[in-house]
Each structure stands twice: as structure tokens, then as C-alpha cells.
Length: 353
Image (cartoon, rainbow, N blue to C red):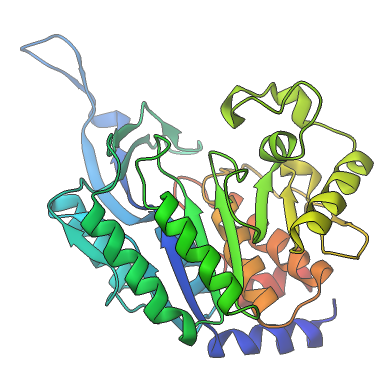
């Protein structure tokens, strides 16, 4: 990809209208100064004094944040938060993203706001160290009335969208936004609007999803492709060694998946880069960019999802979309102690210094 081609592609991002349906979380960082450590008089346990609190949209919200940073025109988050303090902070963080419309984002007393609370110890001259995370999750399925509102919103918005991202990030399978009814609605939209780019990503695997553009990691690919002895396992149960398949084998599997689904397939491979395949085309491998120092991988996958979606909707080739995605991921992993962002100006500097 040339600088001119990158400029032409990214200039088109401002015209794109993108919906993101899925699990929105609040990423709440507690910054801790170890120099202010104390011991509790009452319990004798260590006291971590928090000097600042930072909140940002997480999970599907971080995808929205990355879409905004890359210059997407209009963004519609489709999800929910609770009527709680975390929900207030999540809404405030989403409102700060350029181009966001919250008209179809629900606030309901029937759900708790999905929250990742991350205590970070900051020692001068060292990378931040994360203590045990504190999570707030929902443990039962989404109420039917909330599910119905989201499905209706998807139907209403679809004619105006250029792309739709489906993000299943719920900590417990079956308790998040991406229910059977929501997937049924997405399937209907994919048939009714064949030119709509719909990209799906799920931490629980994509085997139960309708045919869409799939983005997955190596372990999820191993499960979906039906590697010997792995077809009945959940993604989290797969031996990490089985995910380190030869690139040639992953390419063959990606081509088969793309041919069967009639949609593009992307497999992220951490330090080995990314492989993509489209129906009727040979799979392409784009290596990861070299490391430039300490890294923090939080948010890298969300940056890849955002970059791939915008690039495909703007008319990029498979190779171009993956080059842009790898640059976005590289920028994010070098931002320590935060859920990072990738901007077009930074992508340009990284690819064409």
C-alpha cells in the first residue's frame, strides 16, 4: 500500500455509517501510587491509595472508540447499560466519541452495567502493574423486552448503515446482548442488505453465528475449523499449543471457511500477524510490525476489528485492510496502562515514517 492509497482509503471513512451491536462495558482504571501505601489499622491488610480514576468505553465500546479515532462518520452503539453509577460513566465516555449517536443505546434497571475495574500500580521508571481485576457482570440472560428493543433498532437502522459490527464479549455465554434472537435479526439483515459489511467477533467462538465476515484469534480458528480432536471443545479449553499451527495450514483452513461461508475470514495470530481469506481467493498473510518497546495487549483486538471494518466498507482489498489493521494493533499495544486508540495520522507515520 502506498501513502496515496492509504490517504484515499482513510478519506472515505468520514462518509461511513457504522453500527456496533454487542456487549458494552466500562473500563475503569484505578491509578495507585505505591509511595502512599498504608496498612489498615482495623484489618492489618495493605491499603492501596488511588490517586486518580480513569473511565473509558470497553468491549464493544472500545470498538466504537477506535472507529471514532479512525474518523468514521456516524456511529450507532446498540446495547445497554444499567441505571447505576457505572452506567452514568459509560454513557459519559461514549458521548465523548466523535460522531456517536446514543438514540438506540438502552439504559435499563434490569441489567447491571458490565464493568472491568483495573487497579494499576504506577512505579516511576517502570511499566504499570495491574493488580487483581474487579469485574461486574450479568449472570442471567437478557430480558425479553430489552432484546426486542435491540432487534427493532437493528431493523430500523440497517437501511442507513454501511457496516455493522457484532461483538459478543459477555463473560458468561448466553448472558449478553448477542442472543439467538439478535443473531436471527443479524442474519435477516445480511440477506436483506447483501452490500452491508457485517463483521462478527465472539470470545466464545463463532460456530453458532450465521455466515458473516468472521474475525477470530488462533484458538477460535482451531475450534471453528474443526482441527482433529478439537471440534467439541470450547475456545477457552483449547491447548494454546494447538493454536500455533503452521501458517500454511491456517491459510488452507481460512480458504475453506471463506469458501463455505461465502464471506471473508480473518485470523489474528498475535506476534505472527494476521491471515485473511475471501471466497475464491488465495489466503493472504500480513506479518505483525516490529515491537518498539514494552507492550500492553489490552484493546489490540478491538483496534483490529475497527480498522478491518472501516477499510472493507471503504473498498479496501483484503491485503490493504489487514495492513491497516496491523498498524492499528501495533499502535495500541505500545500504549501502556490504558485501553489504547489508533488514529489515522499515527497509522500514516507508522507505515510511512
